[in-house]
Image 1 (cartoon, one colour):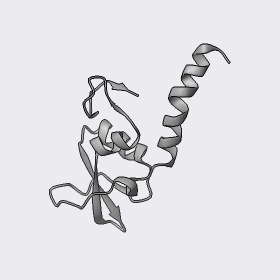
Image 2 (cartoon, one colour):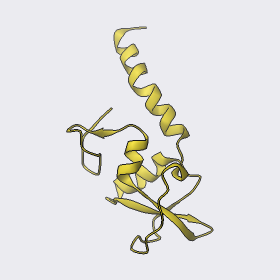
Image 3 (tube, helix red, strand yellow):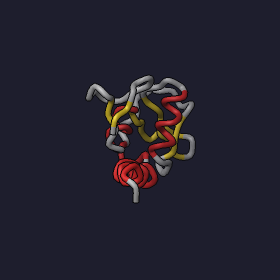
Image 4 (tube, one colour):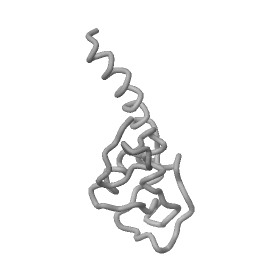
Length: 101
């Protein structure tokens, strides 16, 4: 394996595994009625799906629903932390922030 491939394997494989296995239910917080119900994710959705929604819509948190009723919420900062991501400056990652792993 080339040096570049070893680096990529050491960096991306653990992150990919975490992204594939971590669920929204792992970072669930109590629901706050100030969080809109649209867009929302479900308890069994992958954290990466929640991150994609929050980043593409420039949101810091999302409602988590079951049968269209709110059961909690997730924060972007918690989602990044659960996957082991942080900003280049060591601050919690968020929209528009360059990421390091």
